[in-house]
Image (cartoon, rainbow, N blue to C red; front, side, top):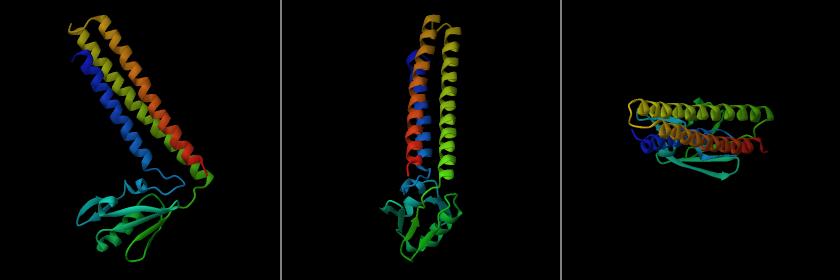
Length: 186
């Protein structure tokens, strides 16, 4: 692999790690209702686990409420069962046509736990990026040993990968800070 390929590979992998973190944050509960809360829930529908958004329309008519309108009314019971089985702690209200979910306000203790979880997820994303840096540096070292790259090129590559790591760690931290601020708001 040459210098540009190693950098491009490292950047793509760090972008993926950041995207995974961004998606994990979307599924975390805050004080507000968000359709993304239900993204991780899978409903057993005709024998296969199916995301709720593929089974119906999810909307937020009020800041503290989610409404699920299934395309197939026969799926109501299964959707309700999947929501009850999830770790969201929500009680679905089924009126025969739609499911309403009231999102209760979070207590101060829940908010602290959530911010701790956000920090943990952010650290995991940063560690993933650091592992990618380590892999890229190994590629540079291997290329230098096999004489396809000079020592100076290797050292410049190490610096570029380090700069890339700083950029992605800052992105992850920024996402974590925004989500923590959102969780801590009343």
